[in-house]
Amino acid sequence: QVQFVESGGGLVQPGGSLRLSCVASGIIFRFVDMGWYRQVPGKERELVASITSGRSTNYTDSVKGRFTISRDNAKNTVYLQMNSLKPEDTAVYYCNAVHRVTMRPLYDYWGQGTQVTVSS
Image (cartoon, one colour):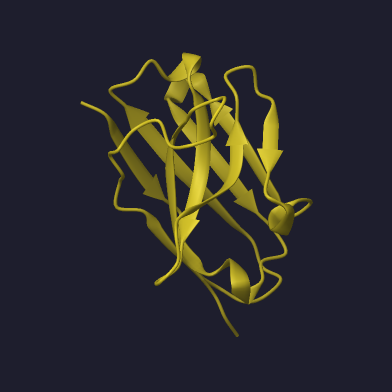
């Protein structure tokens, strides 16, 4: 059974930093590409960062230079280091495996997500 458990969110001031973690189970983690998504009410969930099984990374333009995705295959965990946070980064953040060609989520299952709020 696929499961993703996200953590690390919180309330932070603009310019601050957070590190999100996502532990995956029920998949052969080291072989799959992983991604961090975010969603705000009324909008579609968007992919903000992805990392391949070979550790190549990709970012949406709005977070380039500020966010860093990484993975620890020994811990079945993917991380998202978020620096220089802006109010527009406020969202619920989720992780999922990523289809390498379509870049769409690989699984229909979503965890509970972790809320990130950037506000002074």
